[in-house]
Image (cartoon, rainbow, N blue to C red; front, top):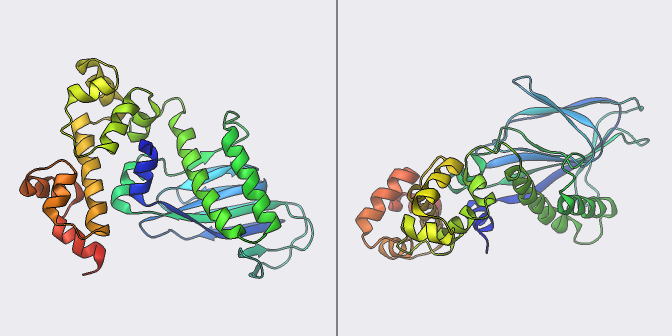
Length: 305
């Protein structure tokens, strides 16, 4: 498994589709803010609409556009089409809930959904994204893979054959990953874990940390994985991430530990050893510093005890 896939797995990012909007004429659909751990997304299948935020940020969504609001920010999707429209109604006959205001010409076909994630671990990804991540296939012509996924998703939504909902949900998650990849490849990408992962050499060091968190990594060993000198590696790593290799290693280890605390019955000492700590006490101090609570308190809260 590659480093980005492992980080996304840690964050437990799961996509779900809420509804399909097939609308005409003028309309305004208000979306309330989502609770922590949820991010709204929209995928425009055809037509166009405007997405507006409370801070007067506005963007136009065109066919093929994917928009993600990582922090679940409240927003309004509006349209000013010319076709005749009727009253807004919901249709639950198919596998996907549908909102319509016309039986005639459809000027906008939009998929609306959300990604749920584990807030602590997902900070590695979600915290580095802008309030609105807008990926335009019309402009990002190199994203042929994303275009293919969108086409397949559109076909599944339109034909609604057996298993369509499961396929659409899985494809939504694939689009999330492809959108992250596209964002990471943009010029001017701010320092972050995504910037590290998009760097061919530094990404090898991150992958080594992810694959073997229990190993006694040093800057020298990680630099060797990246085929760099120690000084060059440390400098480039800091420039790309605004953190040091050892700080990122500690953060990744604590996320791995949190996953084990929640999903297993292993003793804390055994978990500490699995993420590179021979001392349970030392592990506990680092865990509380990074996660904000002791391993025992974290486990009780996550298991509902």
